Image (cartoon, rainbow, N blue to C red; front, top):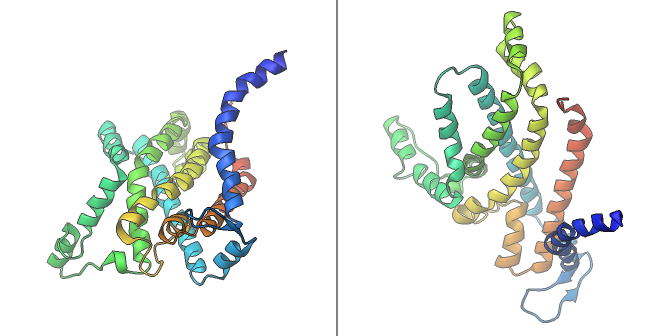
Length: 290
């Protein structure tokens, strides 16, 4: 009877997961084996042809490279940088902490669409503030949206600007929980500040850090679609296209539902691989108090 009651209590959550997660995932796997444009009444079974077409596409290598580069940049800006800011604000800055917290968190409540438009204006190579400042210094601002390599960096900055504040607040909570007496004892022993950060603060707040690490990758890859779609549309020559945008482009640009589904499965495999690495090499070193 108690087991039945437990299953009944779990049933609503299980039903929600089935409808909104497991069924869409299973249907995406199913569609990846078909050729369908979302309008034809009949789907044509093609087996692994969609996957083969992806791996043999000349642009696939660039798309995967862009995806991995996005992840690295997002981790630097949304995981490493929040840790440094949190440490400085917790143990170095003495005054104005509330102001800095509010100022850093503010972009998180602003729409990413609005944020993208702000950055497009700021970095306008002809009439934006950055162009005006560069002109005064005798320099010029490149057309970043058409520059290979630079476009990824700028789009990553736009995305990071949006999600940095939330990650910062979460990391700050973890860093602030590090006992102050431990840090003060290290200072008394004249331990360099960088070693206090690396050998004390980071390990003792790693349980929060592992959460932010995963959150940075997942949220960053979700949010990065907006600036790509608004500004570059994946260009120039797929220079800003990643796996997430490739799904949208194949589904709603070329109406290749099977290929889009195959790309979606590749994203799932990539995230599963990253989680495997995280649990195998990172999780075992996490410090959990008590």
